[in-house]
Amino acid sequence: MEEEITTEIITPANPPLSTEALNFLSIAAKWAKFLAIVGFVLTGFMIISGITLAFIMKPLETQIPVFAEVPGFLVSLIYLIVAGISLLPVLFLNSFANNVPKAIKRNDGAYLTKASKSLKNLFAIIGLLTILALVLYFFAFLLIGGAALMAF
Image (tube, rainbow, N blue to C red; front, side, top):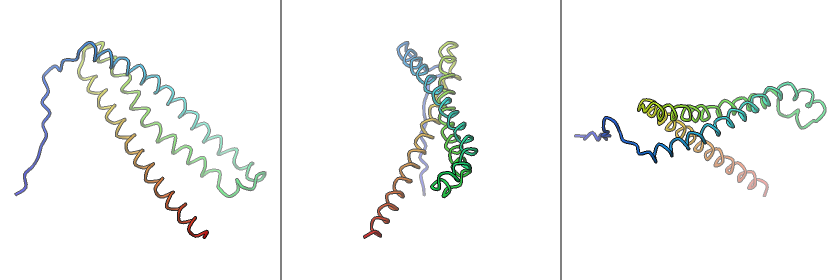
């Protein structure tokens, strides 16, 4: 027979948060808001760059032969995909930054729960992106190592 293991989280009806903890959350929310604004601006620049590259790459292909090897729309598409992927963590960070002050001001656990969920999702997305980057680095090193061995 298999035993089913469950973990129960026992929480009081109104979890007490000290004034110091609320202050720390408030400061974290302010920094999160700043980082979210910077993230939105940088993502906007990436989207603008991707769209601009779609129009600029075609004339550059005729002037600079190296650019003819990679289609302009592909470079533009990659920029837009990276911008879309980078927008996800910024959205979760912004949600955290918006919900924490509401939770503190209204003393409402629902907003604190939303903020915590956004923070959990932010770390999950960043964790997945980190794993993806490590896998890509691993394959890049394999390709580079293979190419180096083929050169000898």
